[in-house]
Amino acid sequence: ESFALQPLAMETIDALEVVASDADVNLSVRLPSAIPAVSADRERIRQVLTNLVENAVKYNESGGHVEIVARALPGGARVRVGVVDDGIGIPPEALPRLTERFFRVDKSRSRSQGGTGLGLAIVKHILEAHGTYLSVDSKPGYGSTFSFELDAAPEAELASGAGAVARAEAA
Ligand code: ATP
Ligand code: MG
Image (cartoon, rainbow, N blue to C red; front, top):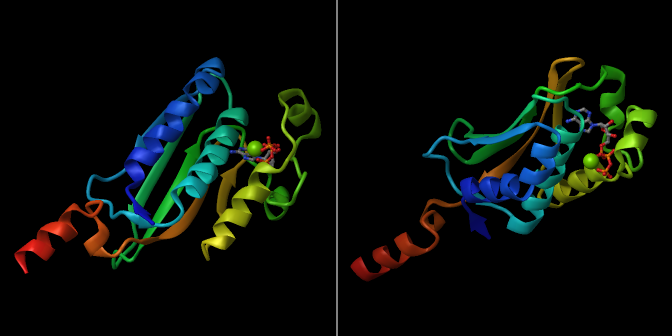
Protein backbone atom coordinates (compact mmCIF):
# COMPACT_ATOMS: atom_id res chain seq x y z
CA GLU A 1 0.00 0.00 0.00
CA SER A 2 1.38 3.41 -0.88
CA PHE A 3 0.06 6.69 0.47
CA ALA A 4 0.93 10.36 0.92
CA LEU A 5 2.14 11.38 4.38
CA GLN A 6 0.65 14.88 4.45
CA PRO A 7 -3.05 13.87 4.68
CA LEU A 8 -2.27 11.13 7.23
CA ALA A 9 -0.29 13.57 9.39
CA MET A 10 -3.14 16.11 9.19
CA GLU A 11 -5.75 13.47 10.12
CA THR A 12 -3.59 12.41 13.06
CA ILE A 13 -3.30 15.89 14.55
CA ASP A 14 -6.97 16.65 13.85
CA ALA A 15 -7.97 13.57 15.86
CA LEU A 16 -5.84 14.77 18.81
CA GLU A 17 -6.82 18.43 18.63
CA VAL A 18 -9.06 18.33 21.73
CA VAL A 19 -6.47 16.46 23.83
CA ALA A 20 -3.82 18.96 22.76
CA SER A 21 -5.88 22.09 23.37
CA ASP A 22 -6.87 20.77 26.83
CA ALA A 23 -3.15 20.50 27.58
CA ASP A 24 -2.47 23.88 25.91
CA VAL A 25 -0.03 22.22 23.47
CA ASN A 26 0.17 23.33 19.84
CA LEU A 27 0.13 20.65 17.09
CA SER A 28 1.49 21.18 13.58
CA VAL A 29 2.68 19.36 10.46
CA ARG A 30 5.69 20.48 8.43
CA LEU A 31 6.44 18.42 5.32
CA PRO A 32 8.14 19.53 2.09
CA SER A 33 5.55 19.63 -0.72
CA ALA A 34 7.71 17.38 -2.92
CA ILE A 35 8.00 14.56 -0.38
CA PRO A 36 7.56 11.10 -1.98
CA ALA A 37 4.64 8.86 -1.02
CA VAL A 38 5.57 5.94 1.23
CA SER A 39 5.05 2.21 0.96
CA ALA A 40 3.60 0.99 4.28
CA ASP A 41 0.42 -0.04 6.10
CA ARG A 42 -1.42 3.30 6.41
CA GLU A 43 -3.55 2.35 9.44
CA ARG A 44 -0.57 0.96 11.34
CA ILE A 45 1.49 4.09 10.61
CA ARG A 46 -1.49 6.14 11.81
CA GLN A 47 -1.29 4.18 15.07
CA VAL A 48 2.45 4.90 15.34
CA LEU A 49 1.99 8.64 14.74
CA THR A 50 -0.99 8.77 17.12
CA ASN A 51 0.98 7.12 19.94
CA LEU A 52 3.99 9.37 19.38
CA VAL A 53 1.95 12.59 19.23
CA GLU A 54 -0.09 11.53 22.29
CA ASN A 55 3.15 11.07 24.24
CA ALA A 56 4.60 14.33 22.97
CA VAL A 57 1.50 16.14 24.29
CA LYS A 58 1.30 14.18 27.55
CA TYR A 59 4.97 14.62 28.48
CA ASN A 60 4.92 18.32 27.74
CA GLU A 61 3.99 21.52 29.49
CA SER A 62 1.46 24.28 28.95
CA GLY A 63 2.49 26.34 25.91
CA GLY A 64 4.44 23.42 24.37
CA HIS A 65 4.75 22.51 20.70
CA VAL A 66 4.56 19.20 18.83
CA GLU A 67 5.36 18.90 15.15
CA ILE A 68 5.14 15.99 12.69
CA VAL A 69 8.01 16.35 10.22
CA ALA A 70 9.35 14.26 7.32
CA ARG A 71 12.00 14.45 4.63
CA ALA A 72 13.27 12.27 1.81
CA LEU A 73 16.71 10.81 2.48
CA PRO A 74 19.50 11.33 -0.07
CA GLY A 75 18.74 9.21 -3.14
CA GLY A 76 15.00 9.46 -2.50
CA ALA A 77 14.40 5.75 -1.77
CA ARG A 78 13.66 6.27 1.92
CA VAL A 79 11.72 8.84 3.92
CA ARG A 80 12.42 9.79 7.56
CA VAL A 81 9.34 10.68 9.61
CA GLY A 82 9.62 12.33 13.01
CA VAL A 83 7.56 13.66 15.90
CA VAL A 84 9.34 16.57 17.57
CA ASP A 85 8.40 18.04 20.95
CA ASP A 86 9.79 20.67 23.28
CA GLY A 87 8.51 18.83 26.35
CA ILE A 88 10.13 17.45 29.50
CA GLY A 89 12.65 15.21 27.73
CA ILE A 90 13.99 11.81 28.78
CA PRO A 91 17.08 11.08 30.92
CA PRO A 92 19.77 9.23 28.92
CA GLU A 93 19.73 6.20 31.22
CA ALA A 94 16.01 5.64 30.45
CA LEU A 95 16.39 5.72 26.64
CA PRO A 96 17.31 2.03 26.18
CA ARG A 97 14.24 0.91 28.16
CA LEU A 98 11.57 3.18 26.60
CA THR A 99 10.01 0.55 24.33
CA GLU A 100 9.82 -2.11 27.09
CA ARG A 101 6.27 -3.04 28.01
CA PHE A 102 5.04 -1.16 31.13
CA PHE A 103 8.23 0.92 31.37
CA ARG A 104 7.56 4.52 32.43
CA VAL A 105 10.21 7.08 33.33
CA ASP A 106 8.44 8.87 36.15
CA LYS A 107 6.07 6.54 37.98
CA SER A 108 4.25 9.24 39.96
CA ARG A 109 3.80 11.68 37.08
CA SER A 110 2.81 8.84 34.80
CA ARG A 111 0.26 7.47 37.27
CA SER A 112 -1.43 10.84 37.69
CA GLN A 113 -1.68 11.17 33.90
CA GLY A 114 -2.95 7.68 33.17
CA GLY A 115 -1.69 5.15 30.64
CA THR A 116 -0.11 1.74 30.93
CA GLY A 117 3.34 2.02 29.39
CA LEU A 118 2.37 0.04 26.30
CA GLY A 119 2.32 2.80 23.66
CA LEU A 120 5.96 2.63 22.63
CA ALA A 121 6.05 -1.19 22.83
CA ILE A 122 3.26 -1.18 20.22
CA VAL A 123 5.11 1.40 18.12
CA LYS A 124 8.25 -0.74 18.19
CA HIS A 125 6.29 -3.83 17.15
CA ILE A 126 4.61 -2.08 14.21
CA LEU A 127 7.89 -0.60 12.97
CA GLU A 128 9.63 -3.98 13.23
CA ALA A 129 6.86 -5.50 11.12
CA HIS A 130 7.77 -2.85 8.52
CA GLY A 131 11.45 -3.82 8.70
CA THR A 132 12.37 -0.56 10.41
CA TYR A 133 12.92 0.77 13.95
CA LEU A 134 12.32 3.71 16.27
CA SER A 135 15.08 6.24 17.00
CA VAL A 136 14.91 8.56 19.99
CA ASP A 137 16.87 11.71 20.52
CA SER A 138 16.18 13.61 23.74
CA LYS A 139 17.52 16.22 26.06
CA PRO A 140 15.97 16.55 29.53
CA GLY A 141 14.34 19.94 29.92
CA TYR A 142 14.45 20.67 26.17
CA GLY A 143 12.43 17.99 24.43
CA SER A 144 12.48 14.82 22.38
CA THR A 145 12.38 13.64 18.78
CA PHE A 146 11.07 10.19 17.93
CA SER A 147 11.72 9.16 14.32
CA PHE A 148 11.75 6.24 11.90
CA GLU A 149 12.40 5.53 8.23
CA LEU A 150 10.00 4.08 5.66
CA ASP A 151 10.44 3.03 2.04
CA ALA A 152 9.41 5.63 -0.52
CA ALA A 153 6.75 4.30 -2.90
CA PRO A 154 7.91 3.41 -6.42
CA GLU A 155 7.43 6.47 -8.65
CA ALA A 156 4.63 4.93 -10.75
CA GLU A 157 2.40 4.66 -7.66
CA LEU A 158 2.87 8.29 -6.61
CA ALA A 159 -0.30 10.02 -7.73
CA SER A 160 -2.67 7.41 -6.20
CA GLY A 161 -2.85 5.55 -9.49
CA ALA A 162 -3.90 8.50 -11.67
CA GLY A 163 -0.46 8.89 -13.23
CA ALA A 164 -0.25 5.17 -13.96
CA VAL A 165 -3.57 5.27 -15.85
CA ALA A 166 -2.47 8.25 -17.94
CA ARG A 167 0.75 6.49 -18.90
CA ALA A 168 -1.07 3.26 -19.77
CA GLU A 169 -3.40 5.16 -22.13
CA ALA A 170 -0.52 6.97 -23.78
CA ALA A 171 1.32 3.68 -24.48
P1 ATP B 1 0.43 4.47 27.29
O1 ATP B 1 1.10 4.87 26.00
O2 ATP B 1 0.25 2.99 27.40
O3 ATP B 1 -0.80 5.26 27.56
P2 ATP B 1 2.78 5.65 28.43
O4 ATP B 1 2.61 6.87 27.59
O5 ATP B 1 3.30 5.83 29.82
O6 ATP B 1 1.41 4.84 28.51
P3 ATP B 1 4.68 4.75 26.42
O7 ATP B 1 3.97 5.50 25.38
O8 ATP B 1 5.16 3.38 26.11
O9 ATP B 1 3.77 4.59 27.74
O10 ATP B 1 5.91 5.61 26.94
C1 ATP B 1 6.78 5.05 27.94
C2 ATP B 1 7.37 6.16 28.79
O11 ATP B 1 8.31 6.90 28.00
C3 ATP B 1 6.37 7.19 29.30
O12 ATP B 1 5.75 6.78 30.49
C4 ATP B 1 7.26 8.42 29.50
O13 ATP B 1 7.91 8.31 30.75
C5 ATP B 1 8.32 8.26 28.41
N1 ATP B 1 8.01 9.08 27.20
C6 ATP B 1 7.42 8.65 26.06
N2 ATP B 1 7.33 9.64 25.15
C7 ATP B 1 7.88 10.73 25.73
C8 ATP B 1 8.11 12.09 25.31
N3 ATP B 1 7.73 12.52 24.08
N4 ATP B 1 8.71 12.94 26.18
C9 ATP B 1 9.11 12.51 27.41
N5 ATP B 1 8.94 11.24 27.87
C10 ATP B 1 8.33 10.37 27.05
MG1 MG C 1 2.10 6.60 25.51
